[in-house]
Amino acid sequence: MSLSIDPSTTGIICVECQEGVLGGTSILPDLAAAAAPAIPAIRRLLDGARRAGVVVVHATYEGALGAVDHGPAPLWRALGAGATWAPGDEATQVLPELLGAGDLVLPRHHGLNPSCGTELLPVLRARGITTVVLVGVSLNVALILLAGDAAQQGFSVIVPKDAVAATPPEYAEPLLNYSMRMLGRVTTVDALLEAFPDPA
Image (cartoon, rainbow, N blue to C red; front, side, top):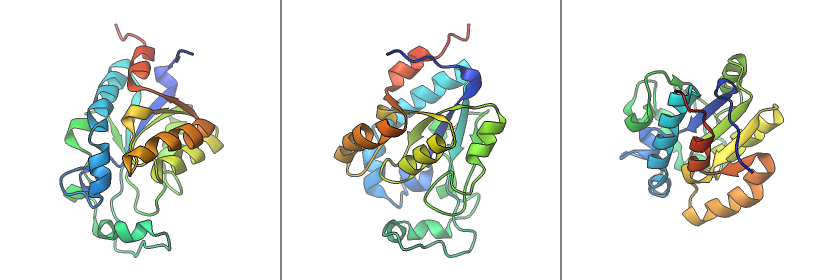
């Protein structure tokens, strides 16, 4: 079934595509390696979305602002270095090839979920957004939590499978097929680009 996209009610959420996660100084090098093939696809999607008038939002993590943000989840041990990040640090910056002049950057300072207790979804709702396209990392935790939260709050969720990543890489397919498909529509970057209306 073909996609139909209304740019005025659609937003793309680019999750944690930042230097300290996917760049050369990543604190999660295995994830950065798994996500490397997705970066060009994300860039193509964001470029096409901007041309069509779709809102692009970067959900980044900027550290715990001096607080201890270590919960009992094992993932916190891997993310320990990120707790010392601060706004403006290189690690918190969106990858330059993915950042556009009109994009929104909405950082958070706590937790594993980009939308739990943050302004991400309220800002999109206030802009009239009813459909969110999720790209970035990772399918293991942040994207699945965000998809569940967005779906529960009444947003339609779309996930282009070639613009997301998991670690290990082979875990992406079952996550998409057996979890994401229960929360939204799984598609491809090319299908989304074809669905964007011609700005001309």
